[in-house]
Image (tube, rainbow over all chains, first blue to last red; front, side, top):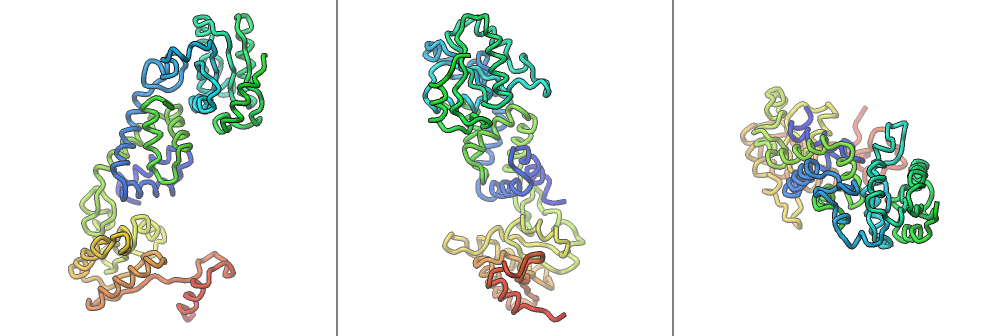
Length: 199
Length: 199
């Protein structure tokens, strides 16, 4: 025995969070129990709600509990005729913060990684192809991470779109190679958008 | 707008956890949504259960959802006639891990801190006095933290028990085992010298 069952259970389950080990889980548990049970209740509720109700946007695959995410639902965002392809919802936020892009997104939810069983269909490239045929955008901006996998994924998508009448560009490598898009500052990200090159 | 309402809500509420800022809250949210919704559901449930059901042990004040915590409920733990006074439930675990103590505990859930409005009653010293009268233990071991507040609290409790027929002791201060003498601060070293024992 360590603590009582419910406390033990909370300490154990908190460790499913990234970066939380036994010691910080214990600290979190006591902090919530001692100081802020209301916040703990709210967090429990928010977790349950999000886990059960959040799905994927039917157009761009980002996380949302509605049929369409707010960006896809806004008609103004469709005017530019640009689609920005990113790996994760966090990347959408990073690009939104840069203020340089007013089109819509397509979120791969990963990158091509055959060894992990992530092929074109797993990252939704079939959906992307259908989307391109349907929306006939003027430009596809490939903003996958500047990593080996991200670059390969961008190359694959560019290849896929060769026969469509569409401009395909890759964000400029003003962003440090080997980094992750999510952690790049807004200015660098803005520069990499304006400096994009045709593939 | 950043993400959809439920996702935003989860990112915001996760920041009630100590040591979790906006960026790690975002990482936790996406990790759970992408990889482990079952664990997220479990965590939500564990949080709700713990926040609503966990109360304090009616004897020692530690966290438990039962009337008595497992240690207070065990009759074997009452045999030594010792009560160890600690500041927090985490301290109970630390002492249990040392394997040197087989008595029961009393958890103050804090320390005397008049400026924060924490007087003797707030840390349960009235309950401790009643417990001593009722259980007539042989020894009270004061294991509050070796800080100014912890020392003051220990002094206060020792004073309070002066008229009871009970041995009151304080855990030894000294150099930690495995450390190097040259890096130990002066106060600790001074205490370890005045508290020296004959071999």
